[in-house]
Length: 206
Image (cartoon, rainbow, N blue to C red; front, side, top):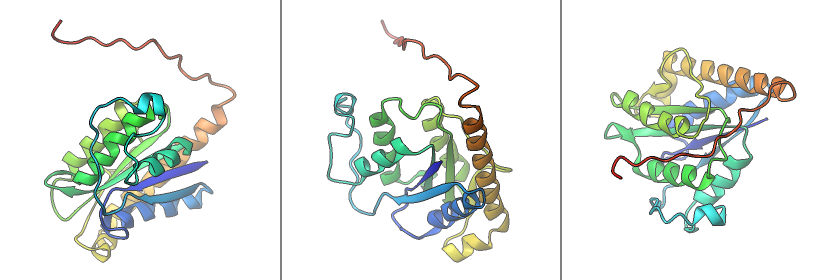
């Protein structure tokens, strides 16, 4: 089993990484492999809704880190999205990356467990947490929770490590994600996956 943790912060080893690393450490105690993918600090294109990814299998734009992250996410058994809080929402580059990641997945993430991790200095964590969870719930992904909302507080990695409750939340998240992955693995030859219905789309204006 392999878990992909995506660091949506422009800082490769900053506060968001510190939280994700704690989740990864806890997964390792359950013998579950994981990797942290950093989206980078360069320009990140937003989704333009061209729909080309449906036929290509990847985003039409190939000048940033999206397609590399998409390839890793498609192979992963679970996905953790991490982002710092910028103006009470996920960082702009992270939002652009996640929008394109889920659009280009073309439904392939269905039934993979997903979890959101948020880091903030003081406020905006719950709004950002809500934003990230919506990627999972529109994609038929089981959402993994912890003992509190999945957030840490601090302005530096050292301050985050001093957030003892937040770090415990990350460890419990790792435990719960490992448990769900083990349950899914144990049941794969016993319980059939839900049958997919043909998609129905209804516009409000006809």
